[in-house]
Image (cartoon, rainbow, N blue to C red; front, side, top):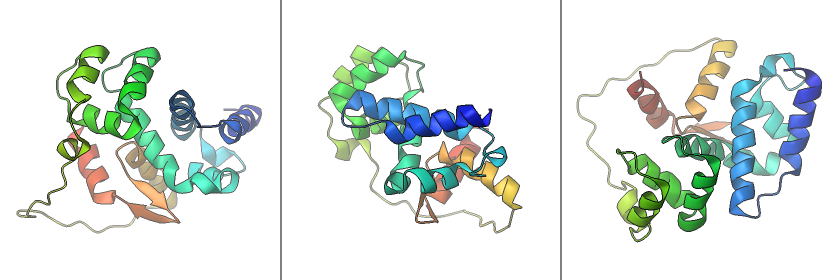
Length: 179
């Protein structure tokens, strides 16, 4: 993407207000596009995370959660209007939790009806499971490959807060499960 387009995209990201559900959705959509379609190495920022830190540092911790949420919302390939319908009736957090729980493609109205009255505590697994039969891997990657992997893992739930990665194990498990 040309630097002019990157500049326009960054300006749009900075200006977009997220006061309503629809605006939050559009913000997440724009962030997802920026994270996954631009070769940040050829820009002044070098990485997507560097752009976020430079341009919207007050949202640094939330950006990857928004991208993850937006990615989850694409699970059933519903049109944007139908996704916003679900968002307005369930809210961001509940919609993401519900869509992660759902294994059968439903229509958006049936989906809302099914999950509207289910409390969040029933949608999110808060219990910890025993770690039996697990293996541990430790290795390093060159920066270029690590940045690429970070981008991929951001779609599977990893978040970066103040330079520290959170949810790395779960995001790697999620990525490998898709292979």
